[in-house]
Image (cartoon, rainbow over all chains, first blue to last red; front, side, top):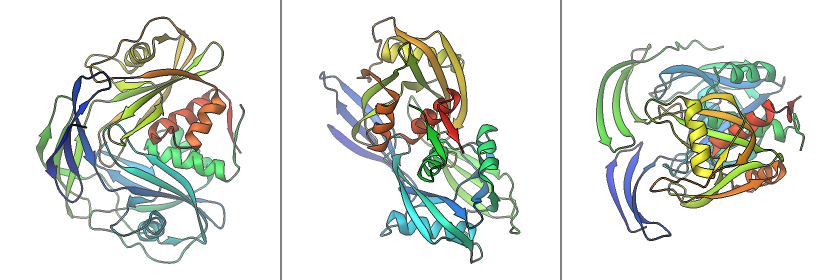
Length: 178
Length: 187
């Protein structure tokens, strides 16, 4: 990297312009969007249902089915954020949280890392506690219903589809023949 | 379960805050069905394609390249923006050829999913390509420096596990492709 300049900055998003020298000596300009890292939780209830949410997503201008998700606040660990987001968005808490891994949400143009968790033995113990901008419906879906919603594109965010597959794999419900 | 009104938000205003030749950042103000006013930032980008290509020998055509956002060299699937006037299928064929030199006999759509439904407009159209073979040299864009590899599916799964293959949207495409190939079963 040869230089970096912040073009735009607010609490949600920072945009930096970088100039790079490629391996062969050419120069290239690149814009990176920095957003806070995020978590996402695949929570199974005691009855084996998945805690799903429905909300409006402004980026694609659609209401979609999703997993509980949110930004990691300053000073929080990913696990703390996962527990908090599950509780705030759905009112559920879970007995056990298992890390499913951290993946990039778009390593080309953003620095955002996305931490996925599997939560087990979830029970509804609180009311929702939503942020100003959140309007969220909570649903308990069977695994079959969830897979159908992926197929029908009602469950639509690619990063969350990964969390579903990683969770199913961890639960031993997904067999890959190699 | 809960009494919360879910509905589309009504956009009140939109201002472009940043623009480059590839995409722009807009600030939008919304009114929600519950009467709240919300400020939101969205990245407007062209839609993209991504190709899971199996060679005649059953290997996956994978690439390695530097990703400035993550500041890492990562394993990936061939991918790129859809050009103006192109269909997703045309873009998938072009990107596979340009980035890897491979062409494939058959392209099967795996569906279009949102890259980041909250903050981006991007739809990622993914394809399974079968009977791939190396037919050309690479034909790379100005900013592209790409290494091409053929991986066993087991090797690819290992790279997902070790986080050498890190882009979550691409991990999703791998699973969708394995499902389409009948190699993945959900119990």
